[in-house]
Amino acid sequence: MAEECIFCKIGRRKIPGDLIYSDDQAFVIRDISPKAPIHLLVLPFEHVTYLESFTQDREALLGHMMLVAREMARREGLTESGYRLVINQGSDSGQEVPHLHLHVLGGRDLGSMG
Ligand code: 5GP
Ligand code: ZN
Image (tube, rainbow, N blue to C red; front, side, top):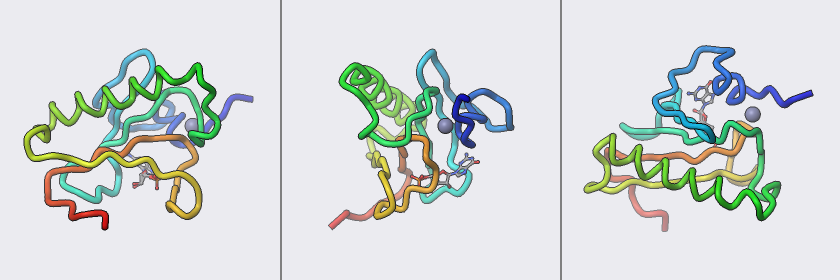
């Protein structure tokens, strides 16, 4: 049976979720609990939990997600001020949803990671 996590359901429009961008490979939603004034999630339609699960032939999808993130940052006016891209992986990162996603955070000084 195909995976049906919450992000799969949003991507397949089985439950409400505002897709602010979509193409044949990926879609973008606003985070339901934003950690910054702009907080977007870039997701592949394909259900994958971990980067570890990606085989070499999925390299193009990962690159595509980065370019979608860049385009969304442009649309949200973050290009000049800057933004942060985050992918949480596994328990130490606090990953909540087991469907790989790229966070796009911006709109305030995010502080250093150090
Ligand atoms: P993670 O911790 O897995 O990297 O991030 C999961 C993110 O998804 C969290 O920032 C959380 O607020 C967000 N999230 C969880 N459930 C939903 C949902 O149903 N809709 C949206 N738009 N975001 C969600
Ligand atoms: Zn999923």
